[in-house]
Amino acid sequence: MTYDDRIGDPVHAVGPQGPWDDVRSLVAGRGIAVVCATWPQWLPAVQDDPALRSLLGRDWDRFVRTPEPTVRSRFAASRMIVKYAAGAALGTTPESLELAYRPGGRPYLRGFDQLEISLTHTEEVIAVGLNRRGRIGVDVEPLGRTLHRDVEHLVCTPDERTALAGLPTDVRERELRRLWTLKEAYTKALGQGMRLGFTQFGFGPDGRGGLRTPQGSRGERGEWAFATFTVFGRWLLSVAGHDAGLDPDPDIHVDSMLDERFMAAVADWSP
Image (cartoon, rainbow, N blue to C red; front, side):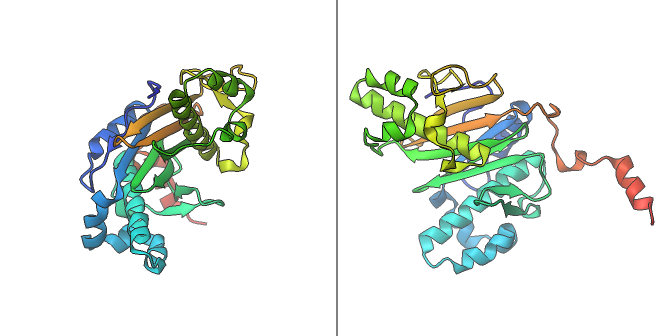
């Protein structure tokens, strides 16, 4: 629906087969890759993969303790997708990656802070965001979900409410859903979730205005990229990606992230 050239189209991962080369190319070229999938497509892997326990790692205990089969399968599929996608970006196997969680539940890759990740799911859709330049947030919501008009006062800035007021009902609903998912994605990228009030920041009506203040003026200097997509015809997926001005080297392969001379010196050193 709305795009930023720094964020490519989501990659549809139909199963453990990927296509992971597309993810690797996006992370190397643009810094950001987004992967989307439906967990039923991954169900055969969840049920039949003999390496599931090693793939889930520390999440295995949570998996086996989850009593409801659908919730358990979706949980396993989401963690598998994260690890396969991150493994493709880092040039390593998914089993070698360990997911850990910050306060509030935000996942990260233990020992691989050169790649930020974000995970979201609703109903059968799962989406994962990867960013080698800075923070990343993703959010997905059903297209058919109706948001009550009173929600505008809880979600929108005065400038956004003014822009919405003159729109036909169907267009206003679509625009409100876009704003909702963008704000979810942005606050997830910040690690704030809904603790940061949605009326404290806004977005332009054309999807290309970047972050705005409540009064409608520019709220950042282009370091953020935002995009919204329709996926699988039924869901709205929004992405917020930050460029922290880190080393632009696109190579984040695990074998090239270590300084061999430094590692040799450490190996030879003794107290």
